[in-house]
Image (cartoon, rainbow, N blue to C red; front, side, top):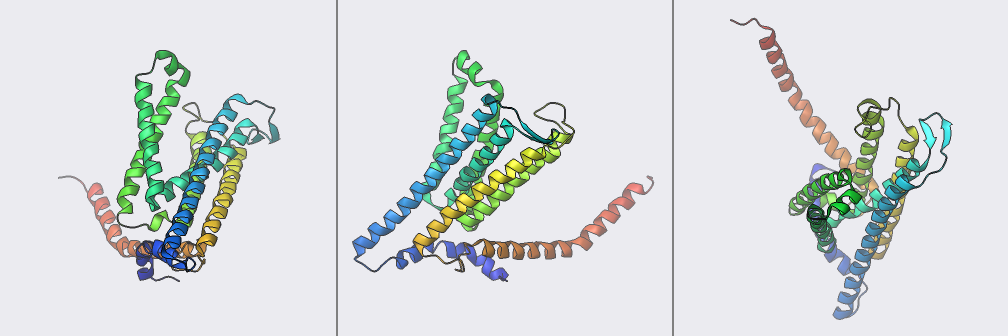
Amino acid sequence: MLTIGEVQRVGEQYDKKLIELYNRLPQASYGKKVRNFEALLMREFQLKLALFGFGAALIIFATWFSSYVVFSPIILSGDEWSFGPREVAHLLGFMGCVLAVWFYGNSFATRSTLFVSLLMGVLGMGMVVLYRYAPREIKDLIGSHAAKTFIELLYYYCVVCLSGCLLRKKTHWPFQPRRVLIITALILMLISFGWEVCTQPFEHAYRKAPRGYVQFAQVLCDFVGIAIGFVVVSGIIRRFEAHRSTKASTTDCVSSLAFAKELWVLSIMTAKRLRHLLPFGTALWTKARIRVRSPKG
């Protein structure tokens, strides 16, 4: 099991990766080494950019598919297990979300990919300005609900981007490929579970009355889409590691097993701190209850 010191040194070790990769290249002339190294980074950048574009295209196609494609659903057991166009859209959309969000999270690791993420934010702001001064016909075509949703997503995008840029100055620990992939999959699964299992059945369904039941077919399609995207990105990461001659047991902890060990160490540290604070919190809670129950005067 990793020690606390090793976990703290992970971020520092990641900064040395470029030098280690450079030293692993075949021995040749200095100029040839530099060209090979630059070509390696360029191929990785192009592949990541293509992956992001494919993910964004899947999300757009899923939105169109859900809105305009109609066919008779396959009903296994009531509305809970009904597979129709929306379920197919959920599968494709969540698969695209894994690809796009992984690129976004991993983009903070290098300047070239970070530039793409910042450029996307600037383009999004430009689209908001264009919509603000667009003719009424274009606004009606887009719809106020779609525009409001886009602005909300752009707001969260910019907040996460600013937070990532600030965190990037201190450590690269969360932005390594496999860590970002695992974090992305966990976040998307939590979003799917929270929306499909908690919000829609009991609170509201797209600002309407709650459904009263869980659409397990959509939950299943969400998780299948996340799994497919996870496998695709994991294969891309393995390709990067093969080109870089990176072993899964290296100290930069690029493997899923090493990342799981790090999470386990951090969980133990958090549990120990909470255990030390528990008596203090219990005492404060007891005093507060006594004060509330005691008669005034």
